[in-house]
Length: 320
Image 1 (tube, helix red, strand yellow):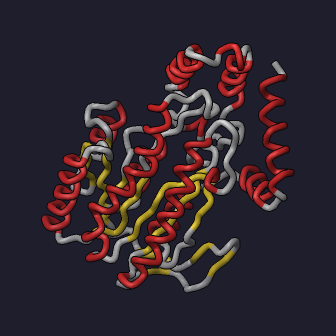
Image 2 (cartoon, one colour; image 1 turned 60 degrees about the horizontal axis):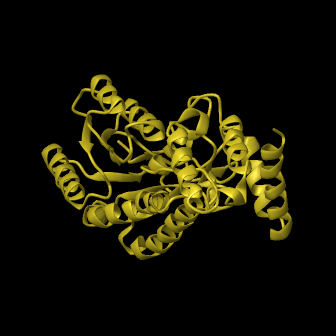
């Protein structure tokens, strides 16, 4: 059987047509308890891949559901806190064992696990800042380092979940945006270093999937923590602005989200990252309207761009 199907051509916005077969492709995906990681684990299992899904807790609702629905020898679930060095080592050892036991090679590491804390920088606690940097940036870097000998040996590929906010940061997610810019800078450097080993590094720039994920489920708790932070010395400075800001956030978040994962481009975009022989190095995964808005903003002069984003934020806060 041929190693790949299709022709070595590109169509549309440089989407490749030359694809690898999913057969016997081993994919490690982090952050599969909920949201996009959960969806990707199901998707790639259905396509016939060996999926090794890591979860923060094997007792989480998502982990239990995955175990019940995908219970065969093509699916494995491992517990992983990407900040825990012992758990990282154990996961790497477990993956090696699975590969050796089945006489397989690793095809892809998908660094998907991440968090976002919404709120202006002055609202955020030190822990909010540290958690985003550690989970979104340091964690994937350390996990990649631990898997590197396998990735090089098997000529595997690394897929890092980035964000449109690496292209265009928005007010209210400055630290999150910084972590995504950081993961892209890391990816670009790593891609050049690993080229000699035929290891590809791809960034999937995720757009607005907020309505389809659990990204805002902890928002009420975060607001309470931020309010406590302001009470110490800045409550008078912001007045009602803080309350109006977060009421607006809850009302308007996810305005560019697709209606469902199935109607979005998410699976097609990750299919390209995983199965295309020569995937694009940066894949933008968003609705058409959101893509157009991002590209429009990116090509504007910076002063005009920032003016539009400030006005956009203020409209939703003051319309109350």
